[in-house]
Length: 210
Length: 111
Image 1 (cartoon, each protein chain N blue to C red):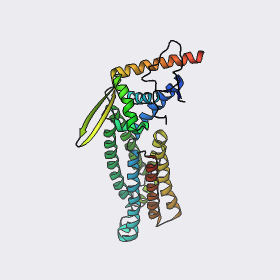
Image 2: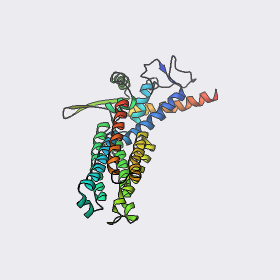
Image 3: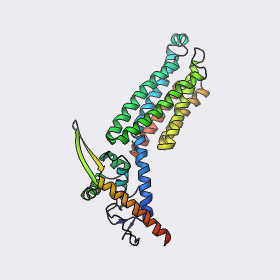
Image 4: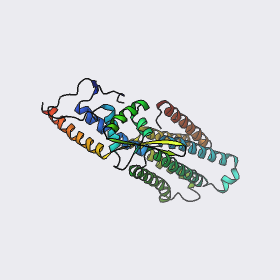
């Protein structure tokens, strides 16, 4: 960061050019990521709740789980819908607090379309792979998580590295427990997501970067 | 990167002293990165540029005195909001500053 300098601070022409380029780049990046940390925290909570709900249903409502073995698909879609609505609300409010102009609207629309594309792909790919049926529907979260994690990683690489790290953490917290453990995997994934939530929160408190 | 002292000599090229200062240059760069009609929130500028309220206000006042920015205040319910926007004169001065900056860089490379 440049110092809060007074008028005695002098820039060379090269410094001036670099400052202009870096500041404009950062300002535009900030428009695409406004409210993103609050959205990440919310998603970590939602994903954690979805894992724990999945574990609770398959453990404590065995009859239900046997009768509808594909319940994880609709369960995750339901939680994802809540997350999308929450993301839009937070993003809209954060955007309004930053600017009232067309640049914010245009940035908001682009970010919205990006995530709609990610969520649409996450829904269509399992269908294209023939997973939307009673016998294979329980594998749908494997595809959903992969596509959404990829969405986070790509968005983070472009705009804010912490979002990419979150995406990686999200994928690891799902795939590792699901390949190592069996029945208790959702519970372990849920706890891992809570850990990710805590780590993100600590990071926010230390950097003050929302 | 930032020194204390005199502005470097670029021959006949004069860089706008109001803009050619680290903090004000970053403020103006942020303001011109959005559409002509768009303001930015004071709070956003403060957090985005990592400035204290006092420092930001001081530099905004200098830019406002030069006619380069317009500051407006409004209330959303009980919450006050301050908006900062580059004026037409500010955008013109910034464009001129960039032109001179490129010329100064050309002079620097040749010498």
